[in-house]
Length: 226
Picture 1 (cartoon, rainbow, N blue to C red):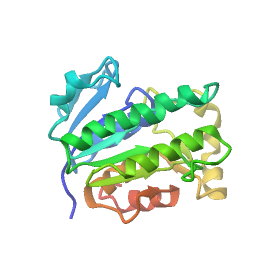
Picture 2 (picture 1 turned 90 degrees about the vertical axis):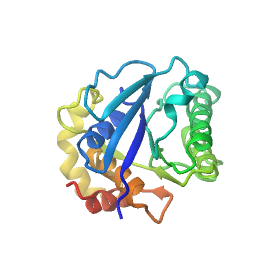
Picture 3 (picture 1 turned 90 degrees about the horizontal axis):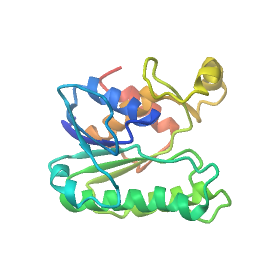
Picture 4 (picture 1 turned 45 degrees about the vertical axis):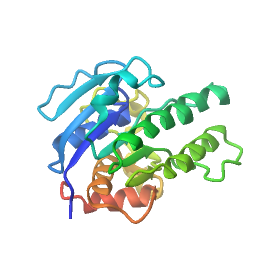
């Protein structure tokens, strides 16, 4: 059974969030979409509403507008490059948990999908700083009282053609995608597949919380929209 989704999406001014939003707009399982962000996305569509927030650590003013949704696709994130661990933890762990904790208290029937990354460290003890922080975030999200929590760990993602927020370096390496997918099938997917996988897991459920690349491909293939 596929449940109809009323989705909250964050991070749509980034490449991943924009790609996930694109799939939600075109997927029949998604009835409505609430974009939550600091600045307007510029997206207009009958399915889409937008809620602007000045500070993700101060959500009281927008709390009423977050009620009544049954899925959240949390695509907001920052790169760890050049960041101190305390700053990265604030913008990754603390920000995510603040938003997710509020949602779990007002939408108990919600599924929460989080974009983590391939190589995330569930032990929280490994050497790469970003992997420890992402692991801590995953672990604490999984403990929140949501209906379900899905922790997506994509690797390389081939961008969706025509979207405006694609990172520039993909223009130079995108041509390598067919070869990369052949050589590293457990690390390479498309942004379209990620979006479809998030919709499929939230709509129909999935037996795993941690969603690796092979699971993303499986869920995307299972989706009714190809």
